[in-house]
Image (cartoon, rainbow, N blue to C red; front, side, top):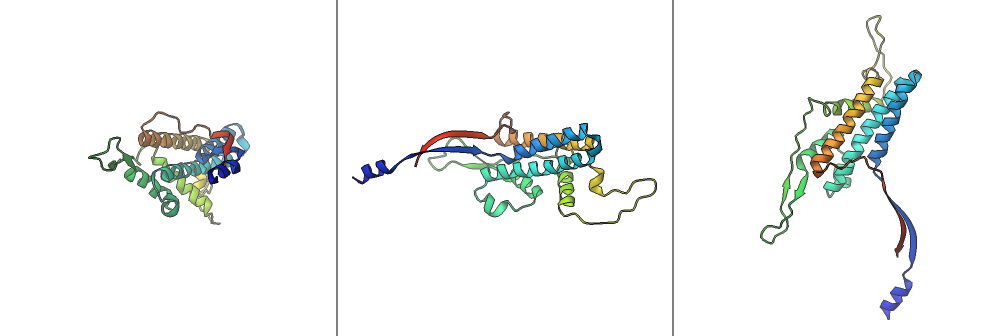
Length: 203
């Protein structure tokens, strides 16, 4: 009788589920910003600045995406690391499970070390992008002195050009695609749309 009673109590409800990949939306926002920078010359400085900020947010969101998949306690202990530490951790400590168990024991896990050259593109832009993000996120009022006729500019201001924003966006895309292909041994585009499901489930 208890089983029959449980069956009677079960009901179906309509649900909508989305697998939200935040880094994909931030990447699109960076693209929109750089497109506006190229067409709206009056505001190209601010659109370029927006593009660079969204590049930084996109990169960290991707690292959080990978970290949560690869590390059991990512959200508890590791998500608060700075972006460079996250990148180094993922690149040097990511584990892969071998397909065949050894002597009947649980499958052996081995580290995969990804070689990242920070002296070359695209990864040479990683620190620069986050330095700009940090200067803006922790912005300070300051006096800037330049020899005339140069226009006084903060370090982050000098990067807010359409050309530089386009380069940072390209590097951001290549960094994510490089990491994704090496971590998962795939040519699958990481910037695919969110996965949506509409249907009914038993509760």
